[in-house]
Length: 499
Image (cartoon, rainbow, N blue to C red; front, side, top):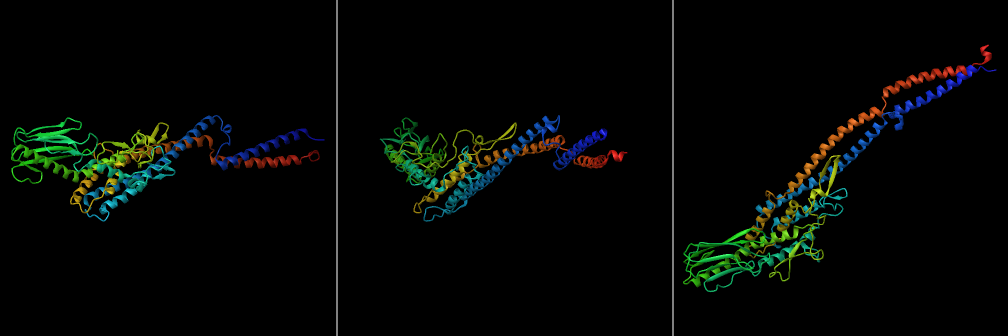
């Protein structure tokens, strides 16, 4: 015979023990993990908020990963830009202080060093951060620039800068007068005209005269343009001058000024002859000599600058240009180089849109930074272009004008490497990137603060106070022990013991 009341109570107590054991296991899990539940259902009414907070934290994590990646790229780029700016300044200093002492190659030590510095600069323009070439625009998977050897010397099939430069020099010099035609006078009239209307050689810019009785006209007529000096009305007086302003291939200007004299002519003078016809002959000879001297002295440097602009100033719509020849000394036009016959120094993406927009990163829901770069940007290109001029030019030790020719080149290179208002510099690129770095840094600071606040709120929702969990475990262990003892006693109870 059994006691039904006792049996029913025992079953209830056993179930209570099971529940307490399950609760103890859950509290131990909470103590170990610090989390209220392994599922959102166990959180209760705040589960929707918890899901939203985790979504926000995940987005913040993504933004911070992007900021870290882009920050690394920008640090590498800034290091490269700083060194490129230093190299440009080193070459600029060399053009001003290096002595003119030619070796057997027809170059100075400063020019040889410029080749090494150009090699380093091209290497910097091929800088990578991870698997991305930083100065290739959108084409981050391919190098930004060709090798130094290919750029300067070509590759056997394609012309490099040195060949383009040599062809342009022939086209600008022509027969020695910079593509100007200064024929023998016709009677009392001296004429100077451009050989062709193309881009080569000297261009007549203006004519200014104080010669009494002489009638001067031009530049005008043609094409090609011409100027005339007509002595039909009579002789000039000693000390009076005529000035012809010439535009060089790189856009710079030089003046040829001749002074009338009654005696034997010195440099930049012409003799007033016995007749106006003799005076015209003397003026023509003096003009031809002065223009020839200018062509020998200043034209090589200006021609090199123009050739460099044609070769290096390239993008998707503007391939490198070269003289349409041979023959080159009588050429009248430039033609676009092709991938088969001319090296293109910039090998990255060559779009015409702003370079910064070629790489854009989102640092926040409402904040983006543009940090793309192209090696053919004006500031970077001009450094490469002018250092290449200095490294490529050669001079003849036997030429008495070689030192002056060198100085013309050095001055143009120094000017090309100088900071000019309105013209992009390497530091301008660095400044743009510095702005992006500041924006990224500010966004990262905001993300850190937001992440901390959201984490605290999420911990309040999902987490459990460890001290509270520990106290509950101790209390539950005490209750469980007492319940086990009571249950054991009940299971030992029988009717015999009761009676």
